[in-house]
Image 1 (tube, rainbow over the protein chains, first blue to last red):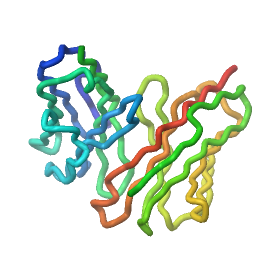
Image 2: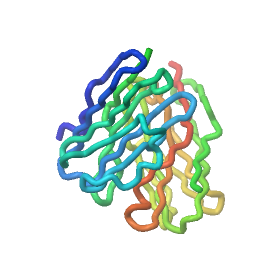
Image 3: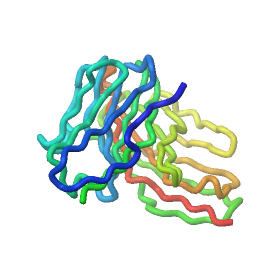
Length: 112
Length: 118
């Protein structure tokens, strides 16, 4: 099993640009999560999906952030327009019905 | 509201010493889950253990052991005979148990940066 796959691993962009982060969960996992890690706020849950349906997006910071899961094997987190304060490491995680969450390697985003 | 507190921001010890990382949690749920994750310098998050609120037995896995005490709302992690490869940031986390949906939201502590010096 390849584990959770995230791309890109590093992204550097300029303020105002659109950023799209991608995630492929582990096959067969029912849940998918997006987290953000910063020095100031630590690890925060942004949104999670169950069977491709968004269940809780209360952690999404503002309307500039959106997430989709068009099928069981792919999800995106989009930031439009990006701002310097969005700079962080973004993690995707997945889990089966009753087990721990498995995290991807993360995407380090830098917004200049 | 759920909360996890890891009061130790950084710990530095010499190799082969034992070290304990503290974790205190707050929750109103009667059923909940506690976790420890390791984040090595490479950045990924590695799952170490999950414990449900009804299982207070201590657990040992090699040099790692966990002490869960509901009376003090603590879930401490001890590394025995520490090694340089144990150097990482360690996170304690909590999820609720109100049905399957409640069990999904992991709340993380701020992490403890552990440095093992040779």
